[in-house]
Image (cartoon, rainbow, N blue to C red):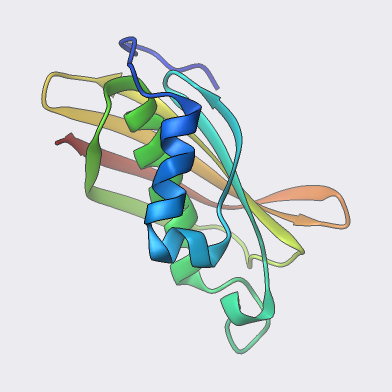
Length: 141
């Protein structure tokens, strides 16, 4: 995926890592930054049993969290401090595996908001399968 219309930001990978340390939910989930660049981010979590639903799939709330976070952090990497204004999540398949990853990228960064997209993947025995896709509007703070 290629980010478009992405302004340069002062936000560093280290600053984003610091967000994990001060965000109790994000830290509890076990969010890791895998890749980071202006307008793009890849995150991952281990899919622990306490993050699954009654069928053993990754819970939809956790899949949504991954999509939302990847979109917001991709936006933040381009424009600085942000909050999610809205997102649309399409669940495509059960999130089955040992790990979830999400790749977020900026579609367009404007003066007041950023449009970003994300794909969420379940990783099972080393193979990735797309399980959700999202489009989000992210507001600058």
